Length: 186
Image (cartoon, rainbow, N blue to C red; front, top):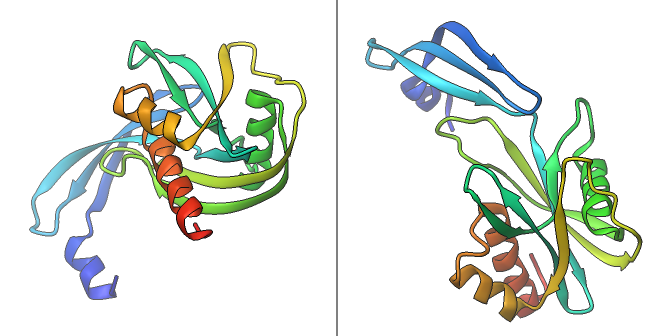
């Protein structure tokens, strides 16, 4: 993006009102000046960032199933979790993989980072590929209830078709896995 295009689209913050500060997110309302000179309000969710792990073992991908209160149903997802303050994303990926599945990664490399919902949230999600896994015991957080499973690519695609896998990070991981199997590259 050039400096001219940034100025063309930039919204200048005039004021910020804090609405809520919780354990994971905070919510604020910003009054902004639009590029056309008019003012508008923007509701913004602040999030510390998160990690997700595409963990491959014996030709399968590790997934976890857990109840997601906002959706009022259980979803099948790749292991994931929020970053702790000052935590390196790769360290968080190792931690979340071990907590949720029990597995430790022999190799871990970044695949992609993306904003989950840039229209209203600043959450940046870092996705990693974990291979050369060593099995251990899961250590979920005290308020985390989940089942770990290993799915083939075909099973994962069927879960997507059935709506059991329906979150962006896991869909990205399934398609990245498919590309990896076809080309050897992600």
